[in-house]
Length: 435
Image 1 (cartoon, rainbow, N blue to C red):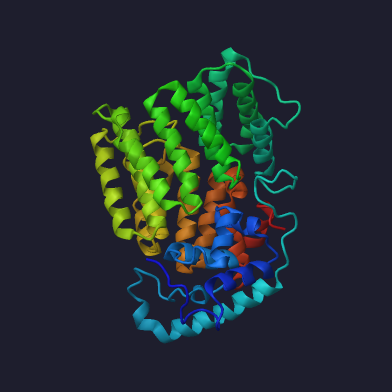
Image 2: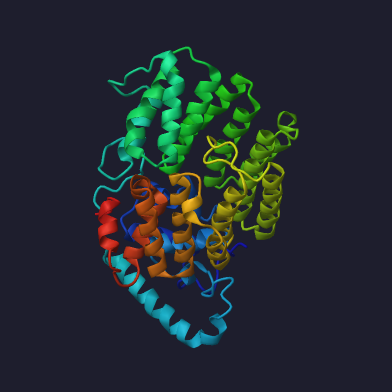
């Protein structure tokens, strides 16, 4: 579902882009800073504000409203939430409540000064926000601008990669900050196996993408080249998948879909071996998420059903654990949460979440993703207490990752800018570096 360039719900005669620019400026954010909160590039924000990308999907518009701390109606989004079957019985009360929230959110947005030291997570100019050091050190390793990085001996590179993957799965960002940059530096300085380099760059792309750092594109490009040199089909497919994530975040939905579907349909992944089937499932799941971002709810659900069928074909267990948490029925179930709220149906996302036992997810990183996705769904639904509760659960599961992720920080900032302060909110904001 997409919105029209102008709508009766927009403020006065202002276009949607003017509303976004006005509210961003009022909060004191640059386009890059706002993009970090939205997990997109500054160029994407610029296209929103100039109207070059005005046909935004419903989920993106709702996320923009949450981050800016404004009522969705100001961006032309209807007040009712898809899937809320009880809204009609209390229309009058809901209208009054939303008007009050609109006034409160507008006042809060005007009153809150720019947070001290807020920059894009990967900023090379310092700052004490969680995740800044990790992104900066990886960036220095990628660009060769850092000093004092220790080179890992060739015979220790494979164990170092295994340790870095384990730290990623456990959301130990502090340990990643010491180990991963050294490994990136080492695969560039030494004549190492292409497959080791590809796996290192794929992991690096995942970390930088999670942190909203623009150098993820550099890592992804090197991952693709190294994977092709390795000749290993699973690595070529994974490199295409992380590249597609970045294309999707840049709003290039057609290219993102083409990347993963071409890989899934390629000859090298054909066959009934469980690993090949699982990799095809990961690629199809990525295409489903892109469809959700494009506002194609039917397409998202059709592709998700295909991924679910592939999970059953692969045997039902967790396969390819090193590929961002792996693939299986649990991965598809977790995917449904983010796919449904991104497609504009937070109630379906919450329903999907209730069918999952988060403690049984295979890694801490996946558990943290579960709770952040639940928080995003509740935030879109306008349920502030549940949003904060889910964020606090994410922090308990993975404190370092949750505090460093722009996605979580944007949710915290949105809660600060809207309505009354909830117990524990300001303390969480402080721990996330939003001070």
